[in-house]
Amino acid sequence: MADMLIKLYTLSDCTVLVKRLEDSGINIRRALVPEKHIVVQWVLKHFSAHWASECETAFSSHPVSCFIATFEGKAAGFTCYDVTCKGVIGPIGVREDMRGKGIGKALLISSLHDMAHQGYAYAIVGDVGTEEFFSSVAGASVIKGSEPGIYRGMLRENSHDEGA
Image 1: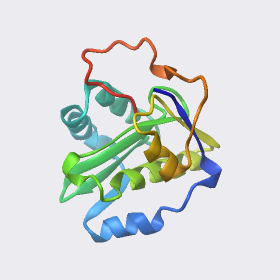
Image 2 (image 1 turned 90 degrees about the horizontal axis):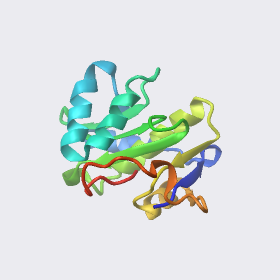
Image 3 (image 1 turned 180 degrees about the vertical axis):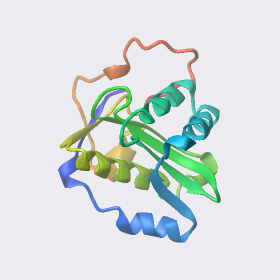
Image 4 (image 1 turned 135 degrees about the vertical axis):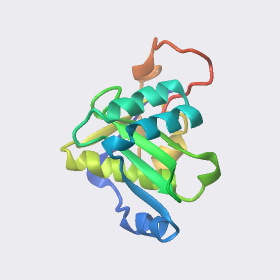
């Protein structure tokens, strides 16, 4: 799968979406260091060991480069950036029963705005699983010649692990 490029200087505002989610009990925010063990274990349970490793790395950044969605005091989604490579966003995942509510979109846009605030002009999505999501939400475009991308040759325990 190819990598995609996102222009951070043309991002849409996510205030209305985040507020709508908040009104329905879903909060989007930066993860806190004391939550590391909870968030990493949740990612491991719902997604993969590779994603959990990347998520764990996000807690080493200052500020933490992991954003989470919570609902009723439990994790509902997450995304990270600057974990496998600088300027790369992902992985991103939403709990299966919470999909279709705009959580993934809010997590992605919130994280991208944070990257812009950190001084990035562009973000790269590595080894994209769903090009349509990233292009429709953030205007991402495929980087020609980027297959197999930054994860080429990565060790894999099984065939269930996917890219961002």
